[in-house]
Amino acid sequence: MVSRVIPVDPFDLVIFGGTGDLAQRKILPALFRRFCAGQWADGVQIIGAARTKHDGATFRQVVAESLKTHASVQCKDAAALAAFLHCVDYVALDDGSDEGWSTLAAKLQPDRVRAFYFSVGPRLFGSLAERIQSHDLATEQTRIVVEKPFGHDLDSAKVLNATLAAHFREKQIYRIDHYLGKETVQNLMAVRFGNMLFEPLWNSQYVDHIQITVAESVGIDGREEYYERAGAMRDMMQNHLMQLLCLIAMEPPAKFDPDAVRDEKLKVIRALDPVEPHHIVRGQFEGGGPSYRQIVGNPRSTTESYVALRAHVSNWRWAGTPFYLRTGKRLVARSSVINVMFKDAPHSIFGEQAGRHANVLSIRLQPNEGITLKVTIKEPGQGGMRLVDVPLDMSFAEALGPENQEPPDAYERLVMDVIRGNQTLFMRGDEVEAAWAWTDPIIAGWQSRGDVPKPYESGSTGPGDAELLMKRDGRRWQGINP
Image (cartoon, rainbow, N blue to C red; front, side, top):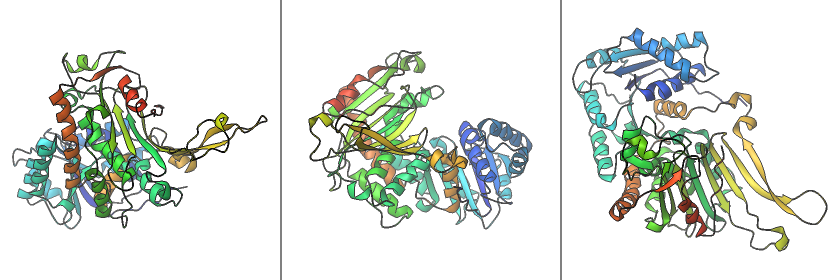
């Protein structure tokens, strides 16, 4: 099965922070792969912009070296690289002065989509937005792309939204969460709303509970200063896991339209109950190498590298159905998975010897993206009716053919959606603020109580208290498997 590539018209994309890690490791490789796939023809301009005093030739050399390291295996053709670099240019400029902005203005083409990617820290968003406007670079077809974190709390998120809104309309602002660009995440909506099989069962009558796990085997190396300020709750739970929860719990939108989808996600966030203190577990890794506190250089750090919690969505569909969310660093494996745990059959005709069996729908986001449905069958052989659980497994790489062995990177989809003007997979301002409104009391609560994260061994599944969180409810976490 070959995926269909829909070409886009020529566009100008300016990447502020073009020499930085995100641009070199993610954004530019994603653009290169879309170029190799035939997403656009001649005329596109990709302009790096940063304080570094490069010229165009030097920047193209930097990009070429980066692509040799970070581009996909299928996209390392020398001729394709040369053709892509022909689209790449560079402007040295500073957000704090007028230097370089007139040069940038002269390079941009009129009457085409003009996107500005803010691959910089949030403190620069306001000054960049102001410079774009003051130098008359904004047009009706202008879009800006901003990376998380979208604030540090509700107050800072409101300030950030107000700063962006002072210069651009909401329809021009693309708040990018790369998790929403993953193929399997997008498939959540296809599985739910494209199959009659699941939607009638997608409620508290048939679902016992839902587990959302985003486990990382890596630590915080290179991000110590940021992570010590943020912690797992701000870095992962408030955005990535919140978005997964919304896609799992949302009502069917009237149509697959950006605002219709985001309206339903917003309803989920606003329906979330406050989280009780005994339904939260925080952890901090130690052992198996330098501990968290050693890495950040703070022997008294109370920042969590792990958090698990039990959430409830108070609406008719999900009344009484708990959602268990967990994420952490230095865990046993890298794994992101959503497990929909269906209830037991109301009555077993096979007797107690058959044991307890329940259906589980597992949606694997990474690695080995795919979907597994665990069903109960008779174990082959003589000796009575012995039941076993077996998976109906669909790995995307196997089901969709060899050309899909390497799924598209999330940034490929998201950057192209910016060019198309499709905001479905991007967070809206009110959605960001609603997420912080739910998150802030949780953080304030453990700060007021003086809670200290529970230690857990690197390479484990997290602190033991997370297992107790489930055990108290008569449940258990599904395994963290690579």
